[in-house]
Amino acid sequence: MDSKRFAAGTVVGGVVLWATGWVIFNKLFSTFYAANVGSATGVDRAEQIQWAIALSALAYGALITMMIEKSGPGSIGKGALTGAIVGFLVWLNVDMVFYGSSNIANLTRSMVDPVLEFVHGGLGGASIAFVLGKMGSKAG
Image 1 (cartoon, helix red, strand yellow):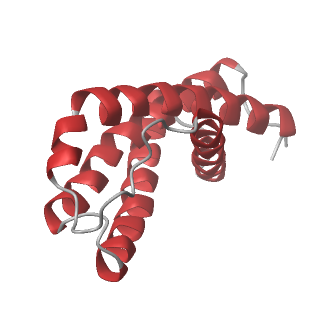
Image 2 (cartoon, rainbow, N blue to C red):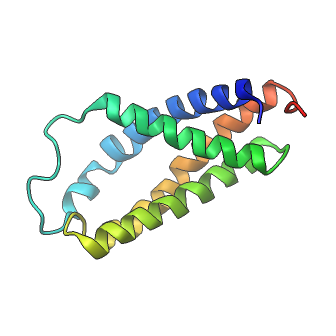
Image 3 (spheres, rainbow, N blue to C red):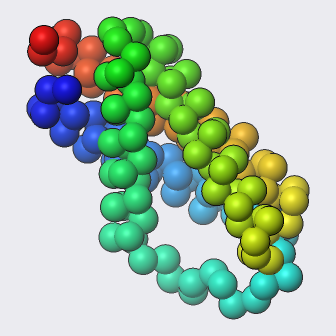
């Protein structure tokens, strides 16, 4: 994998995932998430630690970039689908582990979150595919 393409996809994807994540989860669906917590209390921070969330978004962007690069040349739509599938599967895994092992979220929240991640990851994947497409074909 070309390191310049990987870095560009990771950074662009990370920024898009961080920004769209803030809109989706902190603005559009914040009341849904607050209404569907589990019985655990005091687990949400009063103020989120943004550097940690940004680092998470970069890691997420790197994972989607790797999957897009491994799947070969494609369109923005193919990148969106790749990102959507990655997001759905990763977060279905995380949410089911959390639901099965803790009281952080109820089942409703645990099932809706991966669906929202389908959209979130798809937006990240589309942006990554767009940037990679602008950079031309990957180095052989």
